[in-house]
Image (cartoon, rainbow, N blue to C red; front, side, top):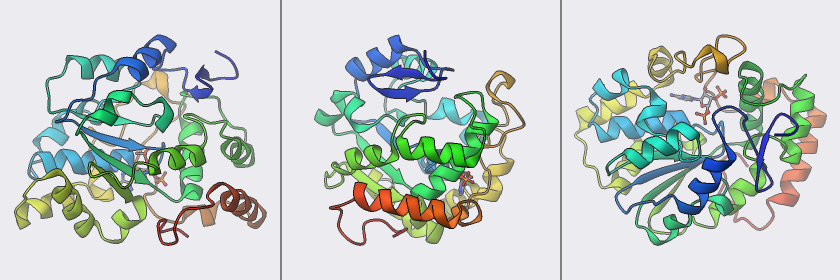
Length: 285
Ligand code: A3P
């Protein structure tokens, strides 16, 4: 451990809940099976929102599962100590999450027919959300200010490394039949159609009433009150102050936080690093 992080293959990970041994084994040996559903995101892109949606789709809108089992148990993280163990013990079809960058992801994915959902989000909102997350949890070193966190984020010196590298890596998979690329922004704009697309991708047929229940119970207001999903059950050893994953849940919160100079500096780096992607791919542009 150096610098408040656990470094693995050049990528910084949290010091709590991760170990080099598990990371090494998970990345090299974890077996993804054809019937698995794999949710991949860069942290703070709406991962837990999507887990809630996927669990509700799986249960045809029934809320029993989301109200009785903590969200991190329903869709364990492949790369964490606890998640890795849990997934290895679990029979399929499994739901699992990961923030791993593309180049570290278990190679078994690429020969499996597992369904992969990648959620992206405006990186400026990811940055602001990540800043709050990092100040409220003991998972990584604490930033002294948003300005300091801004610098770390731009350098990729944050948990799971560079946003730019993460998205570039995973977007190389976007044309595969078993990959669904979605954005936090389209989920906000039109949750019903986006959830319908997810159902279609997963081959799940839901009645209009079941779909209504998925929509209602995965909404920000309802999820914020569900203690199995809002992270209020996270052990105190992990947090610095009372913490909910459902912080603000809006698009464009960066405008309330970044200075004009920071936004311009961000855009300059963004233009350089995101060169070559087709117009219209990113809803925040
Ligand atoms: P903010 O911090 O901008 O509010 P992740 O799950 O990847 O850590 O992402 C967390 C972000 O998703 C937080 O963003 C959180 O508020 C938002 N989020 C969580 N549940 C949500 C929901 N049901 N609807 C909209 N946003 C949600």
